[in-house]
Image 1: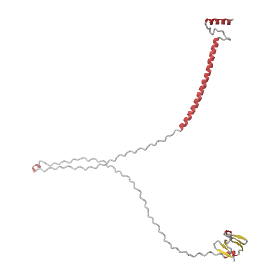
Image 2: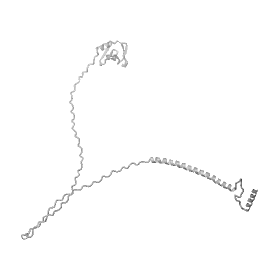
Image 3: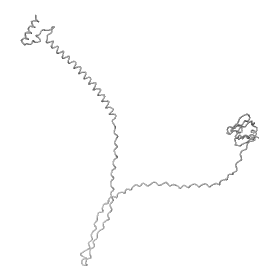
Image 4: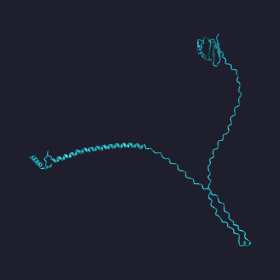
Length: 265
């Protein structure tokens, strides 16, 4: 019944143009309408402030991280720049100019001493000689001028050239006297002779065949059942070699250059 009465009162007030207050409205679920309206306003403000605060914290974090990385990059760029600064070389100071030398005083010539001036008077007559006597100008002592001390003469240092070394005359050695040239004998020396035992050894060789070729290197001799060519050693003890081969003769030579030719009929 109370709800019906309140609804009727509300309808009457609306017809008369009056708006009922929230406290006069009927309660819903045990709560008044003014409390419900205040709670809805406070909850709307809280829902708006929380996202704004979250966005503000996120923005501050982004700014802090960005500032940290920017500071690190700037510090890295400034470090190499400080290391690569060029060191200016020291400026060499010019040597001080030599002090000017004081000019030497020039000596003044000495003035000769002044002689006393004697004024000669004219001769007076005899009558006046007694009254007038000769007048002599007294010597006036003139002070001698002070002479400056003579400056010591500057002796220039003259460097004498070093004396030239004395070179002793070298006498060329006398040419040796030419010695008389001994005339050499035009007679050739006699060739060495073959030893008798070497001749006996050659004559004892048993020659069974001789082959003569147009090329001397192909010529061969068959002696004592062995084949010999030009330059072959026949006897090592006596140094006998075969040096010549013809169809009718064989030539042998020892170490001394002596030769022996064995002929065949």
